Amino acid sequence: MSSELKPRVILSPGKGEIPRFTKGTKATFHFKTIKTSETGDEIIIDDSKKLKKPMELLIDREFKLPVLEECIKSMRVNEISKFHIHKSLLQNYPIMSQAYRKFAQPKSDTEEEIQPTHRCCGLTANKTNFADLDELTENPCDLQLIVELLKVENPEEYEKEIWQMEDNEKIDSIPRLRESGNKLYNEKKYEEASAKYGKAIAIIDQLMSKEKPHDEEWNNYDLMKVPFLSNYSQCQFLLGNFYSAIEHSTEVINRDANNVKAYFRRAKAHCNVWNIEDAKKDFEKVVQLDKSMERAVLKLIQDLDISVKEKEQQEAERLKGKLF
View 1 (cartoon, rainbow, N blue to C red):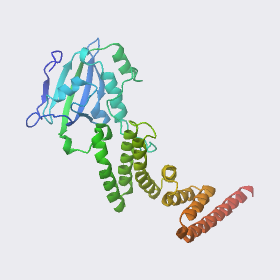
View 2: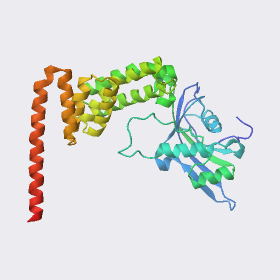
View 3: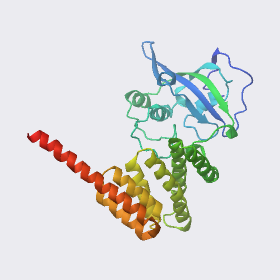
View 4: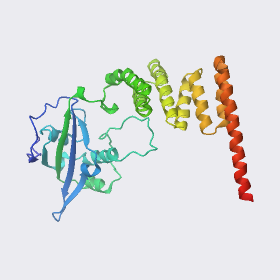
């Protein structure tokens, strides 16, 4: 351990031997950070138990607070220990804490589903927008860290999030995600299937970000997204998320202008949100691309026209009631 990191005080002993902590090992732990005021009072800066969100780190994968990783590597599973850490080792603590707090916040129901999973300790901005952390940046001080090591998993024992993967692991995961998504879809677990397809899309987007737009490799990745976008939009449709289904069907069409399924799915989604003209345009395109769909499409258009008339009549009755 660093000479500026005092020996830990074990508050509760752990179990077994100290794990090997090879590269890529995932450690899951709770932590509480305490600073001492000028009057001797203890001020809690962070407490993961209060936020009900343990932190995770991968060993030897550029964790933003190396001293905390060093602490973890000295511990046994289920151990709780207190570490007194010199301010010279804590320059990145505000950055790490800012990212952790964002990581620990509950996601809203409207939050976009397809996004690269954020890395909980990867921010580098000087300002954190948290007054206590900005104060700590301007006036560094020694801190106490109380750490409870909950779990240690070897690289082959857990499903990695996107930020935890090397590029070759990302590429290898794509067919597995498609297989898992298809299995879940066939089991009518549309929300879970959607998550698998969405993760694959996010991975492909990250791989594309390292290529020059419209170069051969970039184009190959872009085409690779089509089946995932198609499957994702179908799941969204079945879940009743019609605007999302429209958005992602459009992405399919932008890459494959003759994709009958995407037009048909988008048309039905438009029907459900009363985009009548857009729905009819898409139904017409379906028939242009596949004459065998004509009878089914005509029936859907007839049903749509009936629904529109019924809605207009209901609206007229509603307005009539208001007028009289």
